[in-house]
Length: 170
Ligand SMILES: Cc1cc2nc3c(=O)[nH]c(=O)nc-3n(C[C@H](O)[C@H](O)[C@H](O)COP(=O)(O)O)c2cc1C
Image (cartoon, rainbow, N blue to C red; front, side, top):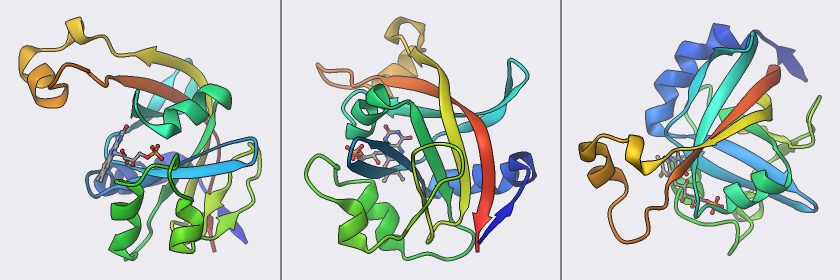
């Protein structure tokens, strides 16, 4: 069962959950993968409700998004096993199947091709309508030094996902 909601009624809940981590799920072909995100923005552009996720070049998630520009945002609605966010925030889907390893339950989507996750029930289905590589020369030195040290920058791309469905899995 899904309880359909207005995503903006949960904007505060989502933004408060972000620093502790929520999940972003992607899929292409037979592969479904999820990763922890701590950064994100929910709001409006072009008159559309949008969730923006910031994904570094090195993530398998980026590769899947480049193949299939759809994702779900998966937000806890109470306590969850902390192991989930730790595991999905350190292991890459290139090397393991995070759904199988953690016993996460997929929930069939409504509009897009990427599933939700029963254990993190607040779900935003998002279709990428714009993407923007964040250029290093636009960053203040302090943020550049803090977030992009080393010879390989591993910069972020902002993926603007139009929120095409929002619900709580019950
Ligand atoms: C709390 C937390 C927040 C994170 N936030 C982000 C984020 O916003 N963007 C990002 O690219 N990586 C973020 N990461 C790192 C990815 O989750 C991690 O590199 C993951 O293993 C990538 O998985 P993938 O290779 O399967 O895509 C975060 C990790 C943690 C633990």
